[in-house]
Image (cartoon, rainbow, N blue to C red):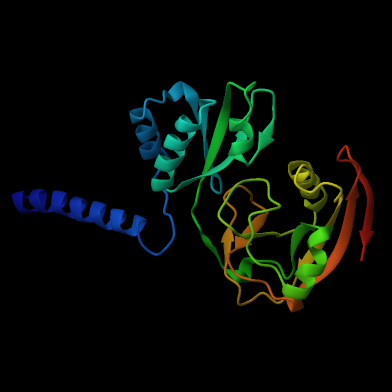
Length: 251
């Protein structure tokens, strides 16, 4: 390499770094720092690798951190990870308690430590030509009349993890029963006496922008509204108080 090229290379690297930092702050979307950089940042906060777990494949990127039950510790980690493009997803205790509302566990005096999970917010666009003709959305039946009248709009309720407001859809009918059961158990405390869920079929969505769900290979999400004319009530699934399916009706 010539002396000129050896000088140009660091300049190019510096410009590239500035461009990457600029892109992290533009377009209105949070871009995500790589796992290695994020873990280094966590180490600099004093979190040892022994208290960090990562999951990384082609579609899912997740960081688990084991912390003491202290709101100051969580807020420090959460605020820093937001800057790095990682979003709080859920917590999980050693006993297997699971949820997406961090305030719920921070107020539990008998739980001294737990895992918190963060996911990468990639907002990777999905080309509509790769999406099946029909996709599905699951909702408590109590919301059905409003949805059929007004359509679907991004909300933060009725989901398994904590994200900015989105509307989620399943690409295939096969996981509907299992996923509905998970949703019922996760939302049971919030939707008392609402044991029936409706499965909605979505049609004619060519002009809707969809993105990959960072936690699932069979679901997508949108920030757009879905008009009522694009929504068909397809199934009703009823649970007992233990979360067992007692009835499934095709509409």
